[in-house]
Image (tube, rainbow, N blue to C red):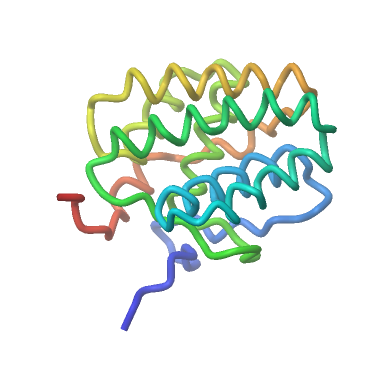
Length: 173
């Protein structure tokens, strides 16, 4: 039986965060991360096209090109540095899974200059101390999204320690 990746409500873990079409930046960053990771995992270009579609609709094609380029570099850095497989929910799932929450939190922390939280999220996400490349690309993506008026709420910055202790994925070989 496969475990669901949506984070359940519990005392030690935050509840799954429900996505809403009303929250533009949160939706773009969360779904962008989801679709880009899914594209890497499956090799299915349709997932990347899904990401392009939501960015292009929200930002217009020129701004989307810049944002998706930065998204791609960040996700590539995360995938390369991760000691385990990064998990994402499928399609338009109504909540963020653990890794998606950490990714959104990392960008929120970058946008609000909360370096310790951003580095903690990076460490919890990739489960490695080799976070410099991931941090560099997260910061570039965060600045790009801020420049496009896509600013995450500081309330999306999570307690990465709670997420780190809840990791259930096997290390990547």
